[in-house]
Image 1: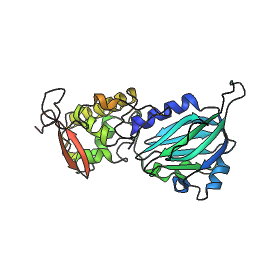
Image 2: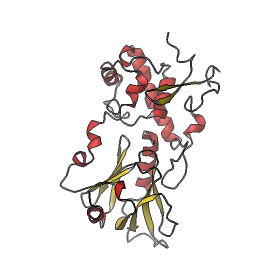
Image 3: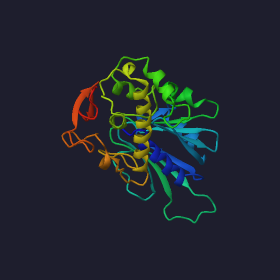
Image 4: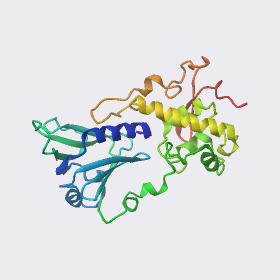
Length: 288
């Protein structure tokens, strides 16, 4: 599933390419990809004529501010992609929604026009159109449960310590809870715990404040590195130009089970924790 760095990579690309372009037609190829409104024609009516003004990210959600005062929300889930492409590019078998756009008057006319496509192989991703008179959180209800963004100034070691003190669950499991901190998934939880030298099965409320401070730094570093590398691709993730992310090539532990740790040379181990594969270095992350 795309996590914060992957979704942030998409957001940056959308802001670089789509702003000012006006939606002139929408084609819904899979009705269940639309989470709201219930009727696909209502979504089409809400979007046609609106210009993209700004794309924001909240956790793993993408939210477009439209010129009409409405909003467009997208969650990529496991295999979703937003692709900025020429209209005459072949439509793939996994394309679920097509948003055909027309350019600003001052732009030079591009042959064939452009479109924003939502592709999704596993069909878990969702799209929302939020009317002008509705709060976005009342429509995209998952936003209500999100914790602070990791790059928010209020996301301090003290804030993280307060969150972790409430749970005796394994720290890896708690990091995956979007109410703890928004945007972290399996990849960057493993990487953050390695960078902070914390064993993934330690109880969250057993960490010392120094460990929490180290974890806070590890989270920021892992996510920043992921964004700098354009995200992680090990299955289907790609940016809006269809280019894969390459963080996986420099990952510390994720999907490196059996390979030597880049710090101490010990073989990276993998265990199942909460039904998820968890990667760690038995030496660097040993419990003291």
